[in-house]
Length: 234
Image (tube, rainbow, N blue to C red; front, side):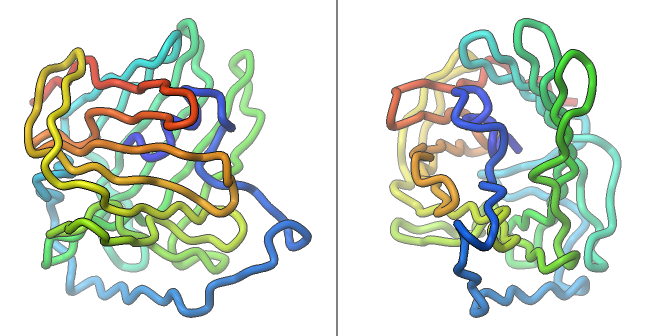
């Protein structure tokens, strides 16, 4: 949910991945081998810092860009795990520029896993790219953790992994931050620093608030903010 929105909103590229090739991305991490056991997953995603309740809609804004995130009632089977489908739609001045379906699932410990995405970029209503799409278990892609069950300062983890294409990582910076955005004021929020070696210029912090999920993203290079402006629950 809003995993790569700040990159889009602040015009730092159109995806969270670098789309590199072997000439620019020679390193493949063979040590990253997450174990995905379908029997270890549950049907809901109720991690307090990343709740995905079907029927909930979040709206974010940054300048003239609007991002609508809808937790759907749909599911998708990935590596034998039933995932919740979340749709992210990005518009600029009212025109759709990206439409993405993300897949998430929670294990029995409470960790929320990011299992892949199907993304399309548009220009003048026409699909111009599907770069950034990936699915765990396909073509070497591996699931990542989008939110740990009990995050602590200093924790770091991969959010996704498709070598040289999707390598977002997060580090927990703080666990008790106040956040104020147009949608409201929140306490005890988690702050992470997100980065990827594929886009060294990417330098952003995200704030996850209890009962809400992502409330704010800040581009540390420009100060640009992607803010939650509304949340409509079922």
